[in-house]
Image 1 (cartoon, rainbow, N blue to C red):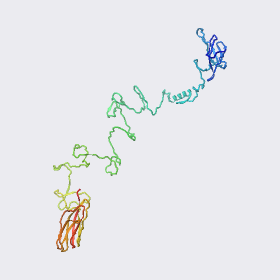
Image 2 (cartoon, helix red, strand yellow):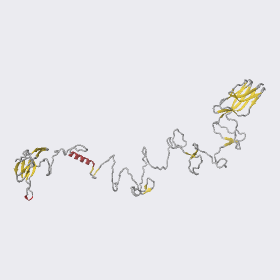
Image 3 (cartoon, rainbow, N blue to C red):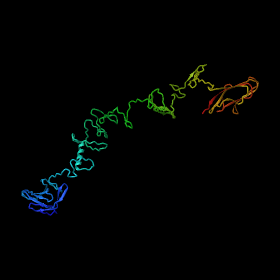
Image 4 (tube, helix red, strand yellow):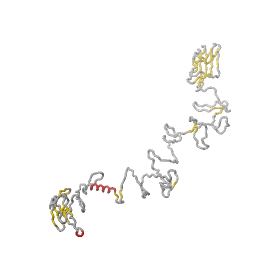
Length: 449
């Protein structure tokens, strides 16, 4: 039977056939056009149609009857020579269709290796990859996914109350905004214990008691520990410690705490009797030590005084070693004992038979000092007149003293106090070359600044 292959074909029970273009799949993904010829074999319930291309593929036309014997168009079913349904292109409904393993390159084989991530692969490989991921995180005992999240921040929204399971539950850092004490955002104390408020130190029903570990030191670096109440301090006594042991030798570079003082020139009252008080100084930082009895006031108490040692008649007083401290001395009536003789008096002696011309007498005492003569004596051994004087350079500063021409004549000044020019030496000159002797004493006096 020949058909026009420009349209689909329909075979009706009365033998009419309407045809059209149709392709038949002869192998997976292989299609050939149907040439439009059919071979009709009449059977009891079907008509077999050979396509004229591949005798293994046949179109079975079955006359399906509707209800009450009503005739319907024949259904065309493609089967192979074994009578099994054949996979044809175009789909379009019908019963279940079985696709051979690997027949579809997109679906893939059931043995394809699992593929995860953004990688190419068949649907079978990707499904196996998903199944592999789920198997790694699935907790079949508790019916849940176990997921570990690291180095990230999670935004969690929760309404209602949070419940932490009993046992060892680590929840990390928790910040509580306790804006309204006693109502919201509070921490309830452990049952049976009083709370301690960190901010005020008083007990409260809405504060949590905290025990601090004593075996963990603060780490190195900057640590903010808030307010600290120290009950006792045991300072060290080493070179870099603030404390120092009694009777220890000082070493350069030792560390300590400077003692502060308060300037109190006006002598204001700092404290009451028995109170702690600062050390008082003047404006230059000198520690002020003052008596408690004013001048010309009645003596009372134990004011700071200058003491002296009384000596009796005929006593030479104290004998001290040079450089040592010495007491003031008084007579038994408390009058200060004063010796008019300088402790630094120097004696000069000259003895000769020739006249002295600009003979060195007292040397230059140096800048800021001067010589003071306290005694002068001269005598002659011949009946010849003689005069004597003292000079500074060519200037007479003492004398002349004249002696008549009598052997054994002399001059004695007695105690005198003759100051000479500062920073200047003195010389002596006599007028006759006869036997003569000179004795003089002086001391060096520092000039006032």
